[in-house]
Image 1 (cartoon, rainbow, N blue to C red):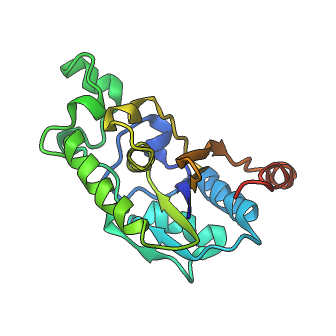
Image 2: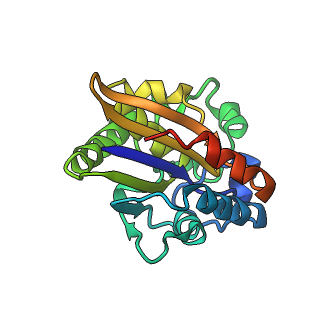
Length: 205
């Protein structure tokens, strides 16, 4: 099995660093270009299952990437519930809670790190029953959490796993166990660079 993780394209809130969970912010024009570039990158690759967060920014990314007719929505791919920190930047939160870290401290009236870990663990176990390549369209923190739990690491490790908008990552199951095959590969949004990205990813499972 191989899991291909796609973080949705740029939004106004991701651009400004505002934590975006339940707020349904649309893609920016650049975010739509990023989604189309992801489609060029993935063109010709076979995926046995395609799942997306139900949020519009993730579903729109899947649609523009060419998977709108196949994608199934999954609540398991929703972003972390930021509770009282929804819409705030980390700098704003630090003014109230100096040194706050999402994957250590959680969010007031939102999800705790343990709750996030339990949610993605259940999803990971569901995915393990699927054969072939699985393509997932989701959000930064949720996909980071899924990746570290897939690799058997502590949820706290997700804090060190930067994941940009419009990026592709790949998790595989190899002879020695779960493996990180590719991480945070930002897809160039200009057509002249997309072909080069596709060539360099040609040998990824």
